[in-house]
Image (cartoon, rainbow, N blue to C red; front, side):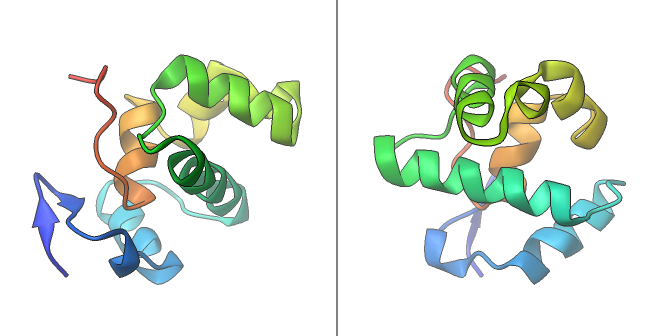
Length: 100
């Protein structure tokens, strides 16, 4: 699996098992609620051609999963630190452009 700055080099390399292993090394207790969000992020990438930063991510999650799951507090709980960056990393997407 090729990586670029710890992000996958190829979207086809991604799997839930790979995401679970990466989450474990990041100290994230990975579960079904994480997988749903990663799948929405990957669909966003498929639709728009770039990884979502926090605002578009929250808006998309709210529209697809409900307002409660599109809140930054919820995402911070699941993906501590920088949720958009963590989600992109675990979803095998390029780092969002607005994330440092």
